[in-house]
Length: 226
Image (cartoon, rainbow, N blue to C red; front, side, top):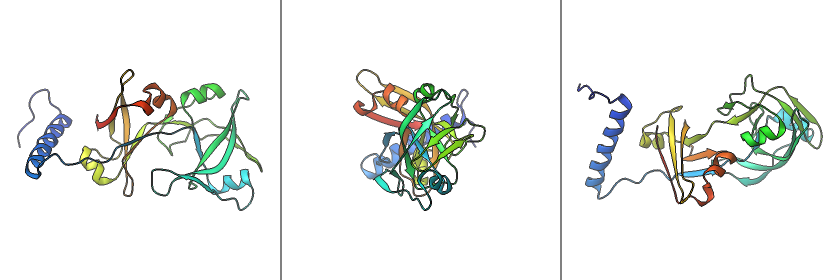
């Protein structure tokens, strides 16, 4: 085994090897291999909900109805919305519920949203809600007094195993998103890889992050290992 040169860590060595292999394969096949189709979407504030909590808010037998399919297979924005009330009695109306139902109820806000309603939200990966703040949720048929479940979602990228292999990352690894823009381009670190079969390459930013780089008018986006 050849020891890496002084100053290079394992990640540097792996990156260099990937670049060499990519160039050589590209030469053999007449060009560089096409990478995954990269989609970057702004994920506005929303709620995930359990079937039990859905019935509390919308009545017995309530089911989510599809308003619009989302990019990931089987996921959708539902017709159902609720009102969030924070400790300052300030409200966020028309908070959209995303489907399908989950095992635990969770509200995802941007920092700007959380400040407006007076909730000190931690940054967490989706589903990691233990010890997080709660809120009051009002629906047309009832209300929920959540004692936890409000977070700012950690920026992340969905990848299937083949796409993760292309980027040389594993589930949980941090990545870097580079947003090119004529006036407010931005490099965003800490984009966590979420790898699972059936996913498609998609980065999720919240509204604060998307607005900071004027994502709708970006000229190009790139994704790379950290």
